[in-house]
Length: 421
Image (tube, rainbow, N blue to C red; front, side, top):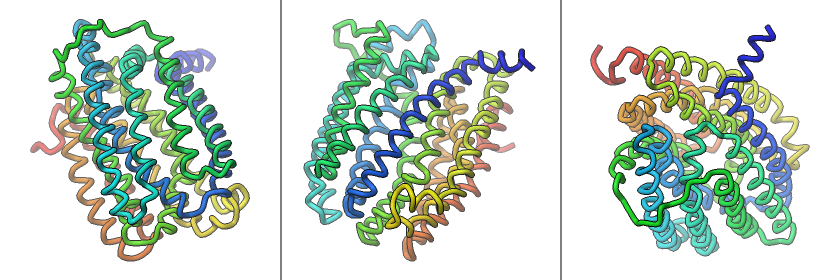
């Protein structure tokens, strides 16, 4: 038994998840205090504005973080990594500047769409966040490639502590939505310092885009998948914000963050650990299958208890922690929280497909899933927010296990998901 425990603790995936778990627990403890402060000092309108701003910046981050330079640098062969790193650095500058400029241009149409001029300046200023990324993105990717996720955990914890502390201070000073904008901008410095101090890579100084095609050709699949994931994660916000009041959007956004926030944090933690873990075993199908099955088991052991415990205790902790004004959000919170149960398995299956250069299969599935999901949400939005939350749960419980099984069989049988048997 002691030997098994020792082997388990020495496993790279378990170590990485352990570090990320520690950082995320620290982050969530701080976040609870933040949500309490914001829940008591923010109006439902301010929560609605926050939901819109976060939806916009999260969409931009899909291009930069999920579909940017990191996936190819993590998956690349050793002999090509030096050249790819320089190309990735300059490619990322072009990408981040373009996205920042585009977000500034969209600020006015977005404010017009929601008929709220308070959105313009926060959206434009938040675009500056993306200009920090090129200074540390390559170091981040190389550290993940080397399975040194401990560094990322430290950066996450430090950034969270500084940003969340600033949010509390600024919110109590009455700065409203600006407390979030300024705090997130300042927190970017933490990522820059930690990653540059813990990896020696620096750009050669010579501008080059040689190898950008290899980066693009690989990253286009995770980018497409993440864009569709983003659409599914935010289509309910967009429709509620359009067909219902901003107050109801604030109620729904609160339920999402207070309920699904912790579960999604755990899911993302597992995701960040799984991809480099699977890439390390990609040369042997036997080793890859063993690593994949192990990843699935670890996901279940982490996610299931969190989701069940949080959803069952919601009627107790919501009025105590967040105040009684959020009691109407409890049914929505519970339903959305339960939708997290099948998500980690589908996410690990997506990482498996990317590991073996089968990203197109994952993209095909996500297109299909997004069409079904969006159609269902459009219909549900004609009723109320509880119906929307119920549809979110039903679609995830029904379809994501199907994808997980199909993806596993696809890789280990050598056939595409949609190919004939």
